Every structure is written in structure tokens, then in C-alpha cells.
Picture: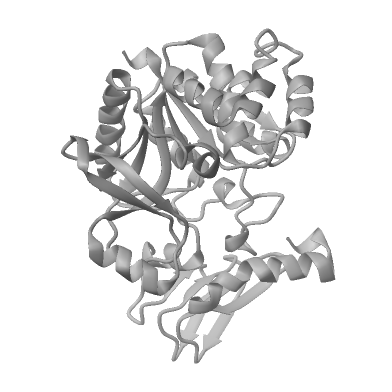
Length: 361
């Protein structure tokens, strides 16, 4: 039944790889990165509203982004915004959401998803999630969505499937998880046909995920279980603040998915990208005759090819002689970086914080 369908949208990241457009005060999920008039968070919410009742959609974010969530998603109630006092990675935020949802509906089926992904085939995505909900309702498994690679990508994690244990034609038992590989290993993964990109989207029943927390992350589960009578009351915020101060930083992948024996992957295809980098945005952007992706009304390019350029509409920008570059101009910062070296942007942000302070990040 649709009333048992729940969604948890994780919206607490800082998106440092999209600096200088994405800043600590307003990360990429709250920006109209694609230039379509909606932020990534708004697109994600609308995507899941077709699958779950809007009152069953929860947003987990840092408490400093509360006003941004309220502004961008006026439809949802205060109780649907789960505010984290500090960043502790994905396992604690999922545990928090589990207990909130349990108080409302112990029979819930839950999809957990990041707030900043691009989905090109929305109808196919909705069909995949509905099929996944049906599957986890009948089977006590932890399900993740895997995307068939179309290139040896080093920016994604990979899932190896076990071909001997498939429960449906597109659902296979997970053999191994591998974090972002180097280029040689990524090529091996791509050519083998046994590896899929890890989308970071999970589907499970509430009962199955809570049982898994008890087994694999008992200390985190114990901390959040102490608030059984506090969730959805005016004492919740103080309880969460104390709980997070005791909670270790651990991802759901490392802390639970890589350890559990009942993990399966739904191998799907619906035009997915995690939009994690400027290069990934470039791949999905409209380009001019020189293969430049331009966002800004007053940008002129000369002898420049395969660049992504982002600047405010009111600023005139002239670029000459660049190829495969990222050029991003914001209110207080200008980035000019080779596309193939954009992994250094995180280091740039760290250096800026140390040398110039947080004003620019």
C-alpha cells in the first residue's frame, strides 16, 4: 500500500567539489545547478512525491540549513525535517530517520536517497522504486540500486554482483563493494561486466534495516533507541544533540552494507548521475558548437573548446585560448581549473580555509 511507502532524503552534505558555487552556507543541493528554475533538492522531492505521499518524505540535513529547506519545500511539516547538530556521515542519519518513522508506521518500506542526483528517465526511475518496494516487502533484504557502467569511471564506488544467486532477473546478491578505484582497476571493472556503479540509493523495509542496525551497528542503534518516548515531541532536539555528541562518524556502506549477508543490488538504468563534479555537470549540459557548456548571459569565448563556464548573468566574461577548463565565477571567488585535475578542488578548499579563512568557502 502506498501509505507504507516512505522516503528519506539526505541533504546535509557541503558539496565542496562544486566550489565556488557551492559554499558551506548554501551547498549544491540548495542551488539550481542545472539552470532549470528548480534546485536539486526540489527536483528530488518532486521525484519521490510521485512514489510516496508527501507527508511520508523526510529531509535529513544539518541544522544550519533548516531555513533553506523550509524555504524550498514549503509543503512539508516541521516534523519532516530531521536536523543534525553535527555531521556524522550516513549511518547515524539513517538510524535517526528509522526511529522517527517507526513511531509513525512500523510497517514502513523506505527508500533512502541523496538530494543531489540527476535522473533523466523519471518514469523509469519511479517504476524501479515501486518494484524495489514490492521486493523488500516480500524479502528480508537490504537493496541498493546499481547502474551499468558506460565507461571506466574512477569517481564512483562499484558493486560486484554474484551471478549464482539472483532472486529476479535484475536483482542479484552483492559479492563485494569497492570504493573509488584507480583508472587501471576501473577499466578491469568496466570490462568484466560483473561490476555496477553504486548509486547510493537504498531500499528496505523498516523492520529489516532496524534488525540490521542491531546486528552490525549496535552502539549507534542503542543510542537512538533511548529516545523511543521522545521522538516527535518538543524534547527531540535536545535528545538528538546529546546523541550526536556520542555518535561515531560512519557511513552506512562501511558500517552495515559491507558487513551484512542479506545485501542485494537491483541493476537498473534510468539515466543516473550523482552530479558530483563540474565534469559530470558538463556531460549533462547543453553545449555550443565548440562543445563549451555556458551558463551566464554575458559570456564570450574565443578559440576555446570543451570548457564549462559558469558566471552571474550581470557579469561580462571573456575567455580566450582555453581547452578542457572549468571556469566558475561567484560573488567572492573565481575558479580556473583543468577539467582533468578537478579532483584538486577539495584541496583548494582546504587550503583556502587555512590561509584565507571560511569567508570564501
